[in-house]
Structure formats: structure tokens, C-alpha cells
Amino acid sequence: MKTSTKARIVLVAGLSILGTFVGLLNSSVKPESNASAEGISLGIESVLAQEQGQIEYKNTIRDQLNKNDYSGAIVTCNGALRDYPNDADFWYFKGFALAESKQFDEAEDAYNKGISVNVDKNYIIEHKNEESLGHFNKGLANINKNPDLAIEEYSKSQNLEPDNPSGFSGIGRVFLFAKKDFKRAIDYANNSLRVKPDYLPGIMLLGHSYYHNKQWKEASFYLGLATTIDSNYENRDIVLEMIDECSKHISN
Image 1 (spheres, rainbow, N blue to C red):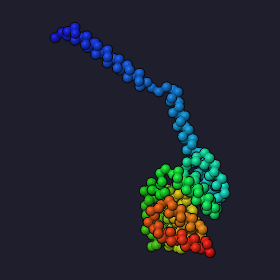
Image 2: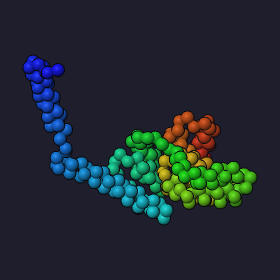
Image 3: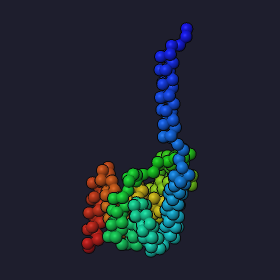
Image 4: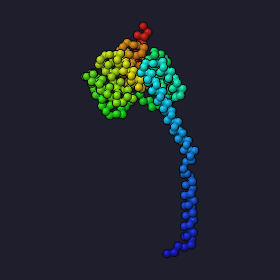
């Protein structure tokens, strides 16, 4: 059957419209210009440079804290905060260094600033390594039953995940609760906070360890900090009683 003249006109018109639409579509999705692609590349490089700068600062601070160079750590934190004022870790590191320097009022201010700028409010670290988690759980199961084995298992967990402070904190709990060696407990609690200065179990462990070692000002600071970070702490009433007792000793 032959196509009528009218039908051919309609078909041609339709193809013309379709061609115009495709042309407009193609023109609207042109590849990015070299200039915009270059801008994106520069933006990515800037972000990576910023992250690298933060990492370098944190490595320096941790090294200073490991050497008990608290004054040096404070200076480095101040430099880091000029560049990255909204990085909560630098405020926490500064607070920890100030507290260990017995500058408790300034330490409280620094920690509170960190809490205010902290976006994720993540004060606990989950295990990413299954083997590390397995050793951690074995340590937890043996704190009172076999303290030496618990220390061994926690050490293995910490070595497998050096960026996770829970192994240090676990060893500290063994020394606090099973071995009653409060000074060693303080050492390991400090180690956990050198990794993550807002690590709530480490802060609570340090408060308890100082309390049992009768270092009342230090105990009051860290116990109070723990209740500030976690207002719903399950043993909050007991901790508040401990803080009251610290205050009585401090005032005497």
C-alpha cells in the first residue's frame, strides 16, 4: 500500500521534531570542559592534603604523649587547632594533655569544646578485625578467672588493631579489678587515651584507677568528664558518689 502525501508530510515533520529534540539533548549533556574537570581535580587534591595534614599532626601529638611530653603536645594541638578548629580530636588531645599536666580547668574547657564540635559523637570504637575481636572476648572472659591469660589476649587484640584502644583499656581493667595494681591500670588507661582521647571506657577506667590510687583531683576530673560525655551512664549514681568523695578529700 502506497503512503499518501499527507502521511509523508506528517512523518517528515515528526522526524524533524525528533532530530531537533535529540540535538537539544546532546547539547545539554556536553562533556565537562577541561577547566571544570581541572577544578574538580584540584578540589580532591585539596581535601587529600588537608587529611594528610591532620594525620601528620595527630601522629606528632601521639608521639609526644607517648613520651609524656605534655607541654609539647599542647603546643602542637594549638597549632593544629589554628588550621583545623573543628576537628574534635585536637580538642580532646589538648584536654588530655592539660589534664595530665594538672591544668584541670583548662582541660575541661578543651574537652567541652571538643564535645561541641564533635559531629558523630562516637565515643566507642567497634572492632573491624574478627581475629582481634576474638582475642578481646577471650580477654574479657578471663579477667578474674585467669588475669595473666586475659592480659595476653588483650595484648594480641591490641597488636592486631593498633588504632583501636580497647586492648589497652582491657589490660587496664585487669590491673584495676583483678591485680589491684592501680598505677599499672593508670598507665594502660592513659595508653588507650593516647590512641583515642575521647574513648569513654578509657576515660572511665582512668577515673576509677585514679580514685583507687587516691589521686583525688585526677579522679574527680575524669569521672566528671565521663558523666559529661555520657549523661545516661548506667552507674552514674555510683560515679557521682565517687566524685563527691573526691571533693571531700580535695577540700580537706
